[in-house]
Image (cartoon, rainbow, N blue to C red; front, side):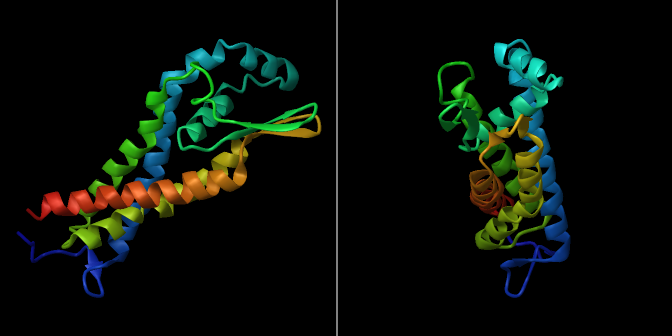
Length: 196
């Protein structure tokens, strides 16, 4: 059942209007923050008590738990973290490497982004599945700036070296691909469910 008062899209039902883009940008920002907060809640205590956090605190004077949680957050998006060593840097995904963190963290960003995309489609009153997908994918507008900023904020400088999320994959994977794909899927599902 299509709603006649729909304001989701313009130009034939596909391009989101300004209201929907605003909702999408806010949803993207909130999705990033919620995903980080849940990651912190699940891993923060374990990281704070780790040897790595203690060494980091001795080297930098900053406990850095929030930064190391950021590395796990990016790892959940498939982004590796660069860790400098004597013979060059090593790229590691902290979730897939060993059993320190639950692999269930890999599903956290997709779940949050699908929900956000669905909410955007419903709030924006998407008329079509394609319109919902485009509206849902628009959460990238809010997610991308925080993904870029986080890649820099979660970096740790020790001497001449810097460790942290790999910038290019943080931008491309966490900032663009994840919100586009999962927000779009959520938007399509939200539009389908709300127009039944």
